[in-house]
Image (cartoon, rainbow, N blue to C red):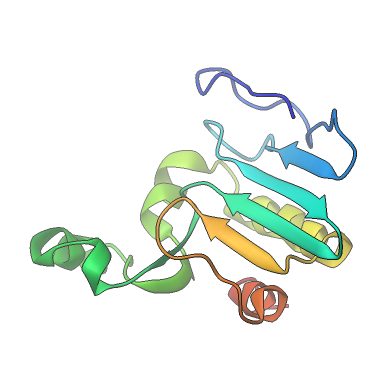
Length: 132
C-alpha cells in the first residue's frame, strides 16, 4: 500500500501494491482522507479516516459532544459532517465513489479511525450510511 503525504492531495482513485489490499483517495478531497481495504481469507476489512466513525458517549466528553451535535456531528456509526466540511470538495462525488467501492468490495469489518470496530452486518450498515 502506498502512503501519501497529507499535504499532497490524491490525484486519482488509488493504487494497490500488494494483492488483496487497496488504499484510495479521490480528487473530490481537499486533503487526503484514507479509505483502505485488505482481503484476508473470506474477510474484507476496511479502515476509514475521519469521514466515517462509530463513536459512543464514552469516546467524547460532554462539551465537545454538544459542539459536534450543533454542527451535525454526533455518535453512532455515521458519516461525519464536520470533517466533511474540511476534507471534501465535492461531497456527492465522494459518496458516489465510496458507493461504487461498496458494490465492488463490501466490508465484513470496518475499522473507523474514531470509535469501535463495526463487525456485525458491516456491509449492510455501511450501505445504509450511503443510502444504498
